[in-house]
Length: 314
Image 1 (cartoon, rainbow, N blue to C red):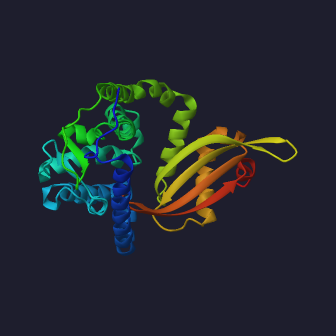
Image 2: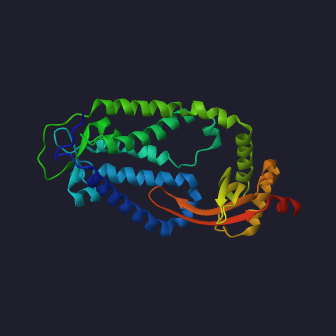
Image 3: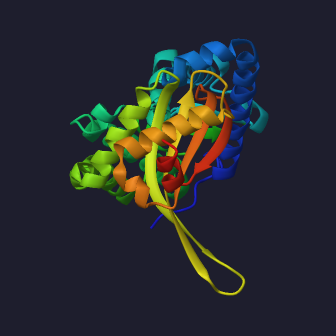
């Protein structure tokens, strides 16, 4: 059975608090820089997340190393630091390696991955890294109460400890945790096996073709297309279900409230996905902005069309 960690090992909430402070600091930094470089960030599109990755890995890599006594701003404020098993701070290369195991899954999650990659063998390593990494990191943060080490700590042999407490005998991670982590990674790596048939199904293939057609529009940087339904129950117990096709289109320019652009994209949906005529609604969400990982700024406007009325107006 597990035992609750000693005082030397930092507790869960203090560690999360330090991460929150650091994330807030980087977010404010990203927001301020975005005030001056918004157009550049928008132009970068999905590549903008690479900026946040570089800034984050530099900040955490340097600050968690011996150059800053193993303490970021958040860790300094909460009196915790990153050390090795001998309670010594770690080298700069080791600190960069440590943070990369944490940053890569989070940076890839939410990135604009092309349809070609999603439908190729690249999906296997991507699923392994993103889902295996995210679930394993979260699991260990919550349930590894003995050492409080997550994936990035286990890989390089580090601990986050209370800086004003003398080191104790170094605890060992509970072995069943490692088994769970292995299962999570294996399962994540096999997920594409079960989703590949879905990608070959008619609705999914047709929606991909519609997405590709919208992406070819010169006003659109990137778009996603989905279909679904919503159910509403009124006060007099009348149940109404609304079916829809939705596209979220990211624009090169801030024209999100332009009804002509929205109508043009809705027409594209009708022309490339005939099944949309059987839906109650075509919804076009025009979006402009950027995401650099550590900060984002979005402006969106939702346009709705009746498919039959839109077809009749051609």
